[in-house]
Image (cartoon, rainbow, N blue to C red; front, side):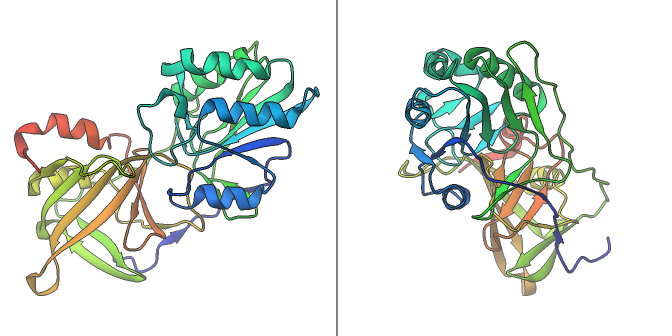
Length: 320
């Protein structure tokens, strides 16, 4: 593998902020996306539940007809979080997807007949079959078109950005949204892999035989106490890490509105054999972010599912 010295900076498509009634997840413990979204839309309401989000939109509309409605938060395919930042919890009032429609159907139904569209400003909410199903269900409930992004979405405090090749998927009350598949990293598995990490802005090459283990942890929930995960041995760790394209580090200019799906802690031998560790945040099982160098990200392949991987490799793991 040729050495890589600079991360690839993604050029994304700018989008003007929402121009209608808007409400944004009020959480302030995420990766910074929500705070920047509030800066971009200073008149937006703030919510901690789907019920509060809808109440904000109803108050903004004020009985008038013809207003567009917008909800911003962290999201994944067919999902938007409505009150807990980048981590999904078990509280059905703090997220919307097809699994908990019985919770939010009567809530969103309050918008029916009052809005021209409902748009979700979150990562991947309109992507894949899950996104198509979710948008189609929302459109049928609110009686207006429902929009969701098929890509990562970013905000820099003044405007939003869709990832390259990202589009707004749309469903109407009479037509189902398209199932738009997400592109994934394509990898060539070399016999000896090399992982390119960064100490701030300095690249560091780590060969696969220097890796000792990998901790796979659940998402970090604030105030939840200690977490329990699994430790993968060298062989299993290399298998899972081989589903991440460490050869092409990426650099995003702004935080992503994606959902934290796992955390990884890599243990390896550094210079002169000293044991080192590196933590990564997994978003939507599609990209990982280096905690030490938070501007650095890496793409994952379609088979990268840390939680499922734990189940498949139970016989190779030690409980932490």
